[in-house]
Length: 122
Image (cartoon, rainbow, N blue to C red; front, side, top):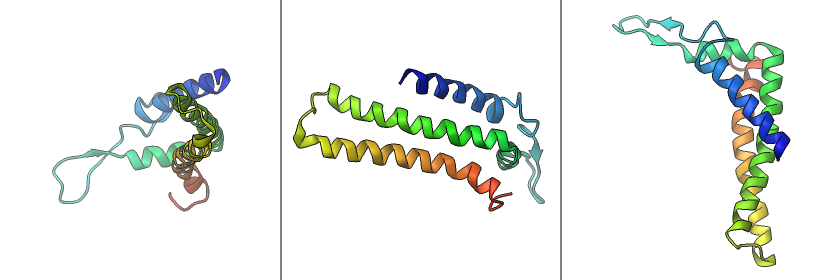
């Protein structure tokens, strides 16, 4: 949990620098204007695509999210144990819930870099 927590924190820092503040991604904050619109909007789509077109960044996101899933599985399992639901009657339910929750988060997050790297989004 310590190492996965440290790596998740590093991932969170990178994620903010990459897609929120634009420190390592020059496309963050790029304004686009649609024909007929009076206002420009930030192109989040272009920022995400530009970021995940870089193979090391996409791989880091995938690995970090797998570790996030392990971290979430353990945390979800442990919270129910802390609440006193540590009973053989509940263990299968806890394991299934922790696995499902972690899997949904990981698969959802990993789908973005994989879609860009596979050329589905671009």
